[in-house]
Image 1 (cartoon, rainbow, N blue to C red):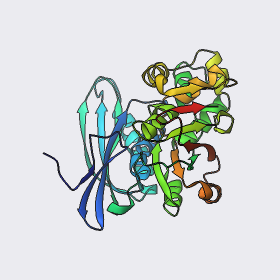
Image 2 (cartoon, rainbow, N blue to C red):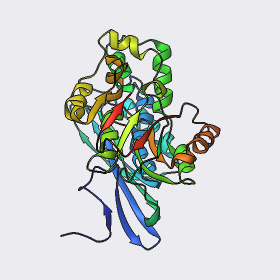
Image 3 (cartoon, one colour):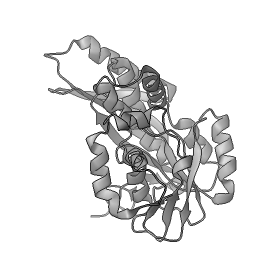
Length: 313
């Protein structure tokens, strides 16, 4: 049975569910958790919390409360590790002005951590991942390559400077970019996570009357990522993302094959991909930069043809 107050739920590939409470108020709800991608427990907690909160920001909402989700191997790991993970998560919740209201933990052979997050939004101001219009320009707010770098971290092959930059980015909330975009005519938005830029881009144009063109030279990428690809540090998720979406992708001549790995790379706690009215893109980018999101860039545009496809040029 359908519920008229459910503005978006499981039927669509949205970043979060939205439930209307009144003409002026709706709940935004999401949940996310994953295994560690860095060695330091506190940093892992920070990244996992930021990643979970990001889905609410992508919808244009303001996160309000959160609950911890913990799977912890208590028989083989010291409880101090769990304490530091939870402190890292709490650190980012406090930064986001989110109240921790509880949580749930189980004993598991594999460590996992994340949050269930509830936020608020006006029902008429929800930004979905579809709805982009021809002529919109695309703003990406964080560099790509965290999946490749995380693979290199696990293999102990990552340069320390590269790791520091990736951690800094993954630990950075998307709140400032989300706040800025609400002052513009944004027609669609999503956060770039496990499906990679192309996977989430496909969700924006699939079964719509518009397509997407990405300028590979304009897309921000972490330093050293190409070298890691050359070393074979490509996660399995990259290939799964490619195999699932390749029919929707056109790779123009001059776009190197290695760069397609970056575009399909599964991101952790990535940036927002914002489709904004074309004549407002430069101003939005300027305000995002002034807000401290300095690596944001205009990376492409929404086009009428080819509909339902992404051209990488």
